[in-house]
Length: 97
Image (cartoon, rainbow, N blue to C red; front, side, top):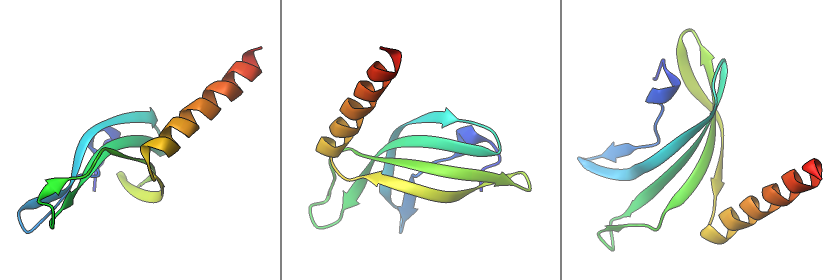
């Protein structure tokens, strides 16, 4: 398990195949609780190719010097990601206005 927030990853290999390929990540918060947004792709063995980009938000708790995943939220589609962005921008705009 990772001892540094920058070491956290969703990349996963099985049988020599990268089944979850991490493309990018953004650390949203650090500390005893860390929040990380990942962009990744899943391997589709039938199609022998990777999926479209997917997104997940993970929360980790640091205990005994290492981070453990405590929760996750998978953004199910590009459409859902765009709706989240649109809603947050609207709420932030309202709060500033």
